[in-house]
Length: 257
Image (tube, rainbow, N blue to C red; front, side):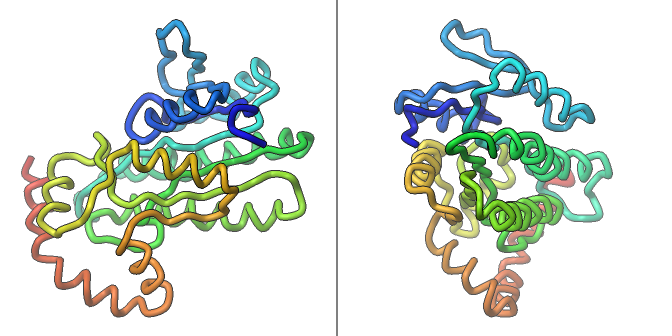
């Protein structure tokens, strides 16, 4: 199915990568429903309210499906980040990250899979992170949520292998969005970590969708480190240990801010 033939529910369309994905989809001629905590006031935008951290997320999805029963593509491009040491991480922060980054994806699939099984072709697209493949100091809870998302999408893809539903997972590397605060941006500069502009990531997501790629990791040398971390994690341990003094410097700045 070509993008211009799709009706897409896009989560996270109001900022960062999601906003750029929306622009790419509009340019391709797709029908887009933008989902977020607040409904857009733009006259030409179809939007629905959706709070991914809410306990009644399932009921909200039911309401959206009732209004738009012909949704055939869902892109989970919403997420939240947290930079800080584990001992400084609040309990409500842990709950928020796990709820938005992981639980919402599971609830989303639970809702749409039975509906999509009745369609000729459909897609569930999940935007993860390189940090779902490589645990990084200062992002313990975020890494846990994204590693969970990676494992969930892998299991879901295998569970639905004999259906017409595409399960696609895209893992960007560090991206220049508001989700990364000043400390994270400055730390990445100090470590020499490249940060992609969101429009570049959006184009890669669209390209992955068009090619029906089941799993895509973006960026070099990040893809190499993902490969090495799966084979020889101790080598990656040693590499990251050398970076700890720099990382701890910015962790202290974050705690004092």
